[in-house]
Amino acid sequence: MNQEIVPPEIGAPAANYAHAVLVSDPTRWLHTAGVVPTDRDGRVPEGVPAQAEQIWRNIGAILREADMGPEHVVSVTTYVVATEMAEGLGQAMAARDAFLGGRRAASTLVTVPALAQPAWLLEIQVVAAA
Image 1 (cartoon, rainbow, N blue to C red):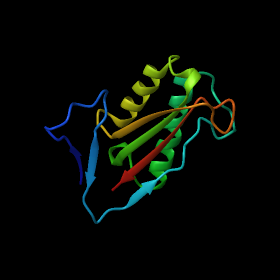
Image 2 (cartoon, rainbow, N blue to C red):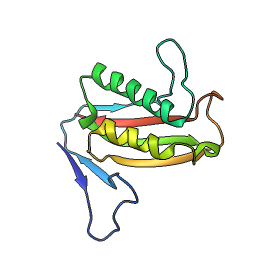
Image 3 (cartoon, rainbow, N blue to C red):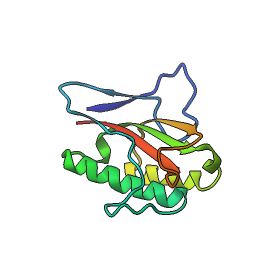
Image 4 (cartoon, helix red, strand yellow):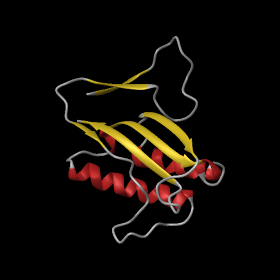
């Protein structure tokens, strides 16, 4: 069972995420690499919102292959190219929220100067437990 941890001693999260999620064993853990916005044919959509949608489709496929779903995601780390922060970041976070279906995972946003491929504007890593 995954349980959101909400200590009364600290402030509320700055956005729609959990400070921490506790997983009780016995548990199967899934750690993804950074998932990138490339489709099956190697195409990369333009813009942060479209890339976020593609990444969450890819994460959904990974979870299904592991016999898991969005409800099993306990942690999300998003890497976004610093120059793209303003353009569509709110829509990218909305894509995350829609994928998670209202559940909140521990979440971190990191700005970076660049990713491995110039066309990639963001990359997302998740940890899931079931």
